[in-house]
Length: 301
Image (cartoon, rainbow, N blue to C red; front, side, top):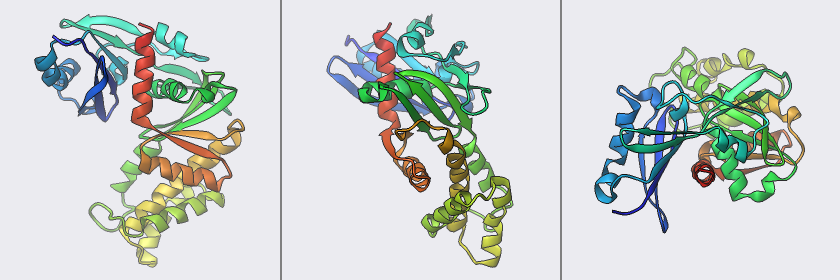
């Protein structure tokens, strides 16, 4: 049988798995996130690995991050405290054997929010941060800032390669909830018509100091009184939410710009918002960073 390892990022909405053999990454599979499961997480994991196991036998080990280590996942793993470097993070990982499978699960981390000092947590994003540092070693020098857009976007600060703080915004979840609200006067999913212009308008409102709560209802008014399309309204809503988030965080960031980690479409929206605040930004692919971070964790096994 072939010697191989499975690497996986298990979030709330999806599971991303990679098969790694001696020559590198040889296959990828996707499954359901832990919040979408109607059965035991182990059953989902086994089904996603079934074709690879049938071909090559059981993996030597499975390395997982994200909500695999939550109370909804395979085993609840305590968060590691910040400041947290890669070595300390790896030391908090759990190793277990479940149904004959050797599994290593990353710990999330807990830190203080920039600005107010409140506690905040994340699971999975820390793996992408350490992956980004592996892919771009210069990011481990000095004080840096990262933003990871998503359902709960994370703003993360680092110093000399160690995570020092984080701040979460429920921007993605809020956008999804409001799309099904009374803010939209037309049923159905928005098209792309007018989305770009609507996003620009929402960003401009946020930059002018319009509060998120105060600006939300314009999403509806613009459709009723200005004959704006549902696509424009969705773009405006996105621009207002992202612009408010970026505007709140921009003054709290260390100098030197921000690294965005995520998918191309959402990263482009955050880059546009950051540009409007005079903050330099570069983007790294979220999957690339997750995979690199899982390899960092595996090297410390």
